[in-house]
Length: 343
Image (cartoon, rainbow, N blue to C red; front, side):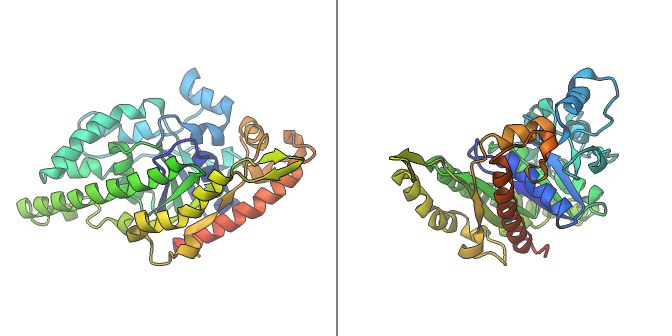
């Protein structure tokens, strides 16, 4: 099973919408067995895939209507002070949603585990085996589910904290949805500095643990070599809305200047993390158009954008937008699949 995270230190770039629609494309068009793991305490991916009624039944009604494992359930043993995860996973099944993906649901209280994982990180730095095991919870989750799926997408919040660090430790790859603003560029600079800093400290902690307890690391699901160090799979750009002048839509100069800088900034900041298949040419996965009313419509009916039908309320020019988005998403998904050696 390949594991990949959608991650940017900059929020508001359409990350969750893009991730869920790419995951659906992998499942529906590329015929892959797909899992989505919602690691954002805002639970946007879970709500988008499940829909409002199912999400209400899971989080609020508490009537046993939705029997699905949340990410909080997975880490409950660690929250309780143990070093292992819950391995009896009951995903929200692909047969129950239009995205055709299984989901390990998010949970609003998942952020509570941040302190526990932060403490585990400090234990890891001292070579403590328990801290290393807790920090590798996603490595253990991957081992638990690896036979069931071809690929797992992890949806992350914009934080540079212990939750996202522990998720990335168990991931093979990551990609960065970006907006046309300077803060997206600053976001990838932050990611680069952050990954470099904790990556070296992680290696130091494992070396110290091996010195203190020779061979013990091999007894547990622990990432002894960070695959994420050569796991950058590319970026997307969210298109801006052009301004009209004299009836003609024209690009904004400031946005164009930002866009022109992105390839070089990606190479400088994340070039050391490129996969073996990545180059400056295929690092740009594609541009994501502004979809106006299609996004809230898709959210309201819990559907991938490419699957929207007239029965969902799609009308007029929305058909053209859907068709154009389908082709764009196809190119993004297929390039991403090539960059992560899935095709």
